[in-house]
Length: 140
Image (cartoon, rainbow, N blue to C red; front, side, top):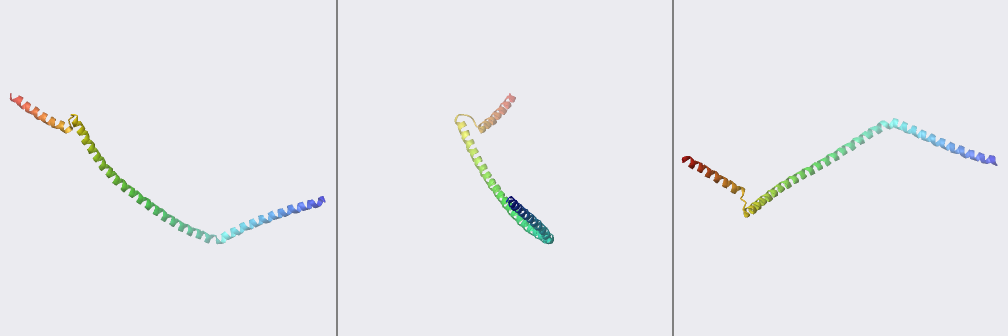
């Protein structure tokens, strides 16, 4: 009985080995078939791939140009908005500055501090008086 079991084991091993050899052969033949097909149809397939690639490239360029134009348009719009806001801010700052200057001058005037205009007027009068005194002093 031991011999029968050994034969069955050997039969299973040889069948498995035969199956592996068969699959390996089929894989080898499939590779050869693919190689032969590429050799005969490869040139046409390559041309088709190039044509498809050119089509995809032109579509891609078109999309990039459209997106670039849209981005530039948005940038121009933002620049325009910034310029407008900048102008409004400058006008508002000028108004605030004038109001501030007026209020500070008014507060200084109330506590008795002379304004720049008052000092300039006083200086002009002082120069006139000095000139007048010098003329009078020369005459005497």
